[in-house]
Image 1 (tube, rainbow, N blue to C red):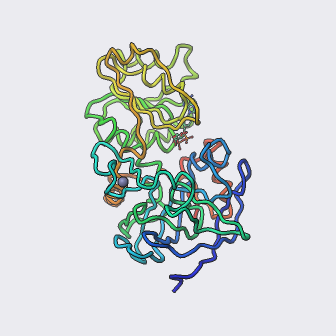
Image 2 (image 1 turned 135 degrees about the vertical axis):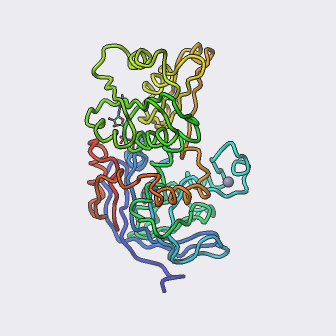
Length: 375
Ligand code: APR
Ligand code: ZN
């Protein structure tokens, strides 16, 4: 057994901002108290990984092992760990759920703050790290670091999932899919018969569409500047498509005209402050709700005329779809197994670890919905 020993394995290391990842042999320490060492078998690649790699993330620290959309198998557990054991299939969670902090105890939020500060600094709660490469310590990322064959995460950042589910699919339940799906179902609370518009038809926007469809929405309008997205979006429930580039009028005006005064629900899944404004202003007077899901770059600000809110539109935001992570992700895995939540359709590309940079290229080129990296 490898328990208690340092493990040498392959990982994609981000040595510095703006450079491609480099495949290296890294050393992974055994888990300390409250920690779990996980053998990652598959991981998605997400915009947040790319954003931090670009160097624009003010919290970004290097060298680091990125990745936060993984699936794996528990290799060994540290002292006091009771909720998972070696051999369990698990999904690491960048929003933990400690079940004891003020946030966890409040049903209105999923934003557990137990380890917020150290997670942001790229270290474990005791201030130390578990990765080394070429004599240097590497930082952790979002409490997950799934771009390594073995990683160490906190027990509170891990959920056990049904073994019948393929890890190279349920890894997507670590970020993109719950983020969109939950935004529709939890944050917006879309009702049957509603009219919805989704700005941005990437993985997040398509997951919103699934949520709107599950809630029984009537019109699900996809808004994207890439016309290639419509064909694929139909499979996820989008039943109308608007390309802002086909219109001279502002997109909010186009949508208001199309829907007799505006949408019941709109979702921003791009991360652009201009489309955030457009999404709010495309909402119906009196009751329209707009949810911000896309993450804008640090320092960006949103604006609109306050009249938009005075007259009954509501502006909201959500992280991880409002799901309390550890209790919800196993249920989403069951929905996947019961064929209620399609995940396979999100995976457009599969690549081995050594081609992880290609997965980033596919994402930037708008060619993939999700590229999954296999170890
Ligand atoms: N108007 C309409 N659509 C746009 C615009 C725009 N101004 N700009 C970009 N898009 C479309 C792109 O063509 C693409 O289809 O938005 C979509 C974004 O999808 P992805 O790049 O695949 O991103 P995704 O993984 O879905 O994540 C969406 O959420 O994680 C956050 O901020 C992060 O940007 C990311 C967003
Ligand atoms: Zn908590």
